[in-house]
Image (cartoon, rainbow, N blue to C red; front, side, top):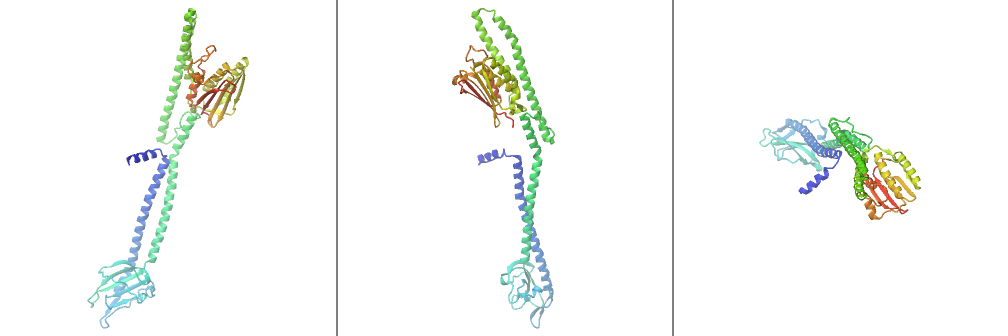
Length: 454
């Protein structure tokens, strides 16, 4: 039981605020309005029946005031007019009766040959019973003492309560229709109130998406007091994170640049060493230089593409591809390109240039006669493909190529960091990179990045 309650609580903890508020309002309406309707119906029924009984009791008092007993004829008489013709119409539903429980009985003409049941009661009482021809009657009755009779007389007045019941039924119908309309109105008004009340949250959500997509740098603080404080706090966190990122990048860059001068000096000094020990020092210095270049490139990478304003891919890469095209021509290599001119992505321009530049530089270094590059959009994914017709790689070599500083051919120039840097950048943008054998026999690099602007 406890685990079921816990699961239910966990499931509802993720429901939207709008749904919670509307369900709370619906529950209140479903509980409060029926209860109010029942109370009002009960009060109206009681009041209507009480008013009807008072009317019958008034008629009963008129009859009691006019009843007499003739000691000579030994008969009960009542000669006063009640002013209601229904007491003269047979089975009209309005009746009066005077009896001594024996042979003395006086009735209204409307009762004809029927009699009303008698219940001894010294005080005025009211009840519902079945009368002539199955009519449902409301009867008011009491016992009175009339001299010189020794036994009490029982006087009763009855009337059909169909009008009373119809009146109560009409009231109930009108009441429930009114309560139903009131409930619908309340739900509608409260739904509008919830929507209006949560509008700042929706606006804040839109603003957050704009910040994520890079079209806005901070959250709008023109909000209600409670949300304005939250927006200001989030802006402070965003600004602090940006300062920390910039500081880290500058620190890493400064450190890398600071190490370049000592490395250059050490390279000059190494050239003065004997040839037998020079090779070892050059290998170690090369490793240090590779590490510096790698961390410098990674420190300059912005990553988290959703925080950048959209950039046009073709404009960003135009100068880079033009330079590499000239380099390919000098090497007698054909560089084919297929770039979507209208595609825009949420990336830092330097990161995009770093990825494409490293891939093309690696392809031109290994290609025999042809290199191709393609940049296309597939929904929200950027598909980047770079292929060459070089010797290619085996599956093991493809895996090793993305490891930092790994060199597959020590006789070729380069640090071996290109693909490793690309791998780091792809990971920062939460993308994927695949290395496989190209159709031309060389290496085919395919990268997918979820950064395409809508």
